[in-house]
Image (cartoon, rainbow over the protein chains, first blue to last red):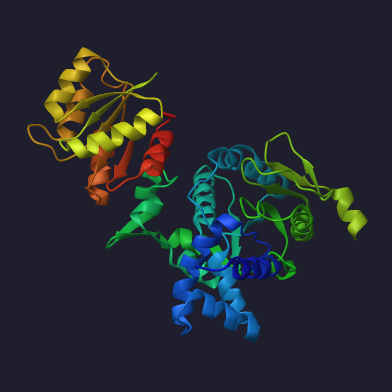
Length: 273
Length: 121
């Protein structure tokens, strides 16, 4: 069990490195999650490991700690209403404006369920004669990205949010696991990216989903992150936040008639340029 | 309040599912096999049926095929709840008229997700 001082220290470092806020109630979970990492690095306990990390100030080690402790809960088609809006309004409207070539960013994708849900939705729209969309999914954790890229999910994971017909249509059973089809895997490119850094190298996006990622951020840090995201969006791009998440604390986005959906403000873009 | 018929030969599974579904505001009836389930449906058709596959007397799939032939038998939303987890079995259940399919073991989150997919909550 971490002491109060140890937990306060690790929480401060994690927040500085990835923005995630760890609350005091997470102390037990933090110890449980850090213990296997500590063993792998050759330390007898999480406390001993943290002490060494503090002295060494090794960025790779701290990145691994932040990855391990940042919340990463996800599921297929999380907040069904958002996917319904994407399918019926947001994507068809952008396809109509652009005539194709739409780029979508799943920011903070964890193990990939949101990105693959998007890929299924794009497939559905393609079968109705619409163009395709390019999906880029990012997370700071290489460990989570490896799982996302594998497209392999447990029976528990495929039963959370995924309708059974979609499971049969897009997955095959591999031993005790379920693997998403190569066709859908090819639709998503997974990249390592920390939301506290400039996303410029990822290119320009028409739609960004950043859901249940920034909830734990402090308002100022959340606003700065959303402004970095806005900088990587088309001037009429669309931002989708998670159900129940607060509106962006920045002028970069204006509300849309759809709850949780915001439009990049072109005026903000001019002011920032 | 919506009614759900839990059809499973395991008393433990029925008890666990009952507890979760009662928390989701369903009124519960139980049956231990397909024949008992058909009798219950003929007395009063439920809105939802949580259905095991392998049971004595009449299996879940036999029950489902018969149910869909009964007067009003197309109305209940049927969610399979079974250890059968091969794609072929799932496809067979959908073809027979299942609305959703849940693989055991399950927890409250999965049951809630499946009932939500099926439009029951």
